[in-house]
Length: 342
Image (cartoon, rainbow, N blue to C red):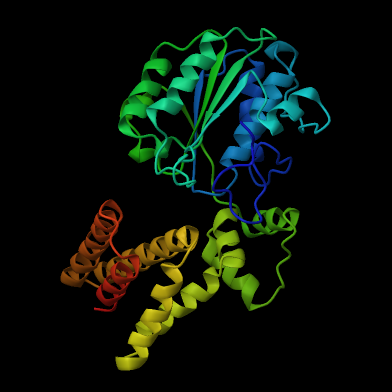
């Protein structure tokens, strides 16, 4: 399968081809030492917020392992991927017989990325392990992210983790490990990655050709992205800064002005190819309501805190129902905005 990743953000580099990694030197050193010791765990849970480099680290480590199949002879640090090496070329093109990348598949009927990693995808892992490695090397599966496994797929992965094949390695990525099956978590060694600091985030964006201007835009991007390259790309390349400004206008306006602003925002969020920015807005809204609930609780206003917390749940239910029954998204968004203003 080609690593022209379905759903890849505009401006992002496919992790399988990305030779740049910023801010995770300690994790790199840990993986290199563990592998070289010959005692590396067969399943490593790489966890942390979305867009901070988990997939890039996983592919970087996979490249290291496949380039140095004998742990004892491997260097004590993760080697830089060599784009001209056979291993790197195979990984970048999705043609490696020793590496399988499991992610949400594209629906052949709609052309859109499915909402979950299905059990059919996990069956590919079973077939992958049943084949003899052409080089006698490691067989590595990257699950990206495991949060997207539906229940049947999660149970199927669990069965493989319980009795892993010889020289098999799983790199399990998760944005929210608390949502994974406890039995999956218990069979993995956790490796927590932290959000990028401002310097590393700026360098990562620079490597993608996005130079921050040093003014208010840079200040906002660094503040709102919370150390995530993915969030920064949504702010810079998907109009995220304008979406936040529009939402702030709705909260500060009254009467016809507020309703007009609500309709403008709803039109944008319900337009064609709006999935990325819609998801960005829903996360921003959730964070906003949680912050309001926390502030109310700290001020001793428990009733308001409970109301704001319940609002988050109610809004998530509205979205779930809207998607399940294919309801008009604009009307759903208007309803959500009205509730958020209350």
